[in-house]
Image 1 (spheres, rainbow, N blue to C red):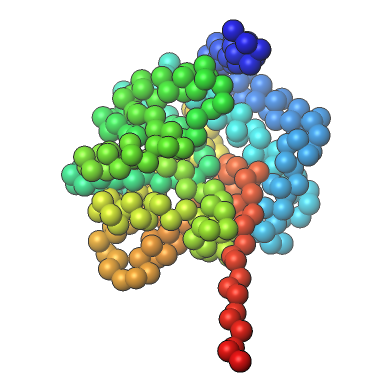
Image 2 (cartoon, rainbow, N blue to C red; image 1 turned 180 degrees about the horizontal axis):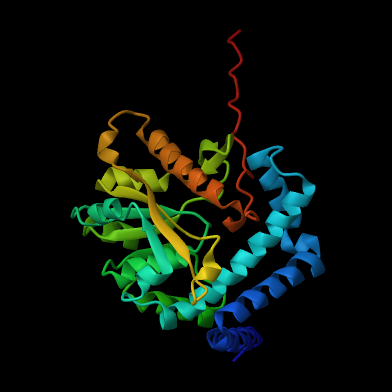
Length: 316
């Protein structure tokens, strides 16, 4: 065993110890722990390390003058609180969340529409962003008998990556690597199955630029292309923490809903890819606006800018 493998093994041991601790904590204590961790990250660690300035600039780009400096700082702190609570909730999910108690912990919005989409016999792409608790959303689909191919980036640590694969397999989900998993994605769609993807990251200078919070954001074309090629319905979903979560004795209180349903068969012109991509991006923006502190603002969403076309010089 080389030094890298030893480091990965050490990280995994620490991670599993944290999982055991999280499962032993009562709800209110876990909230206090996550707030303490958020304070350490937000106040004590170097801001360059926590990408504070990236988050601050993103919030300003998205909301303009809506928040002053103090409010932005508070929003970033609440973002870290949410992210740590997301991790704790994910660790506790296999033990606490069951089909029989799901309604006690999660309220649903547009549930009928979501069920109809998943029951058409056509393939479905469930789209969300780094908002709320995306792990909770996919987990609940599995609880109710809808196995999904979850497209995600592999973790560098193979032991931790295996843990997350097993976490999803508990409810019959299939882990599909974001890198090199194209064939698996196509196979699931061809069989009329379901895919879950996060669709809010920068796609580089060659991506498709659509409006996100009033600014051009580079977005991957692949979702719209796959939907058109395989007649797959697109369901923009979300799961976010409610403000009154302390009312619930388990300390977990979410709203899960279907924000938008997009049928690619409604588009038959040359701008279909652009129109579909803009439509689901606009739906994701609406969701983020409801609870901006639950969005992962440290992603450089507006990193890329549209390339300028070079004008041809007139012939002599």
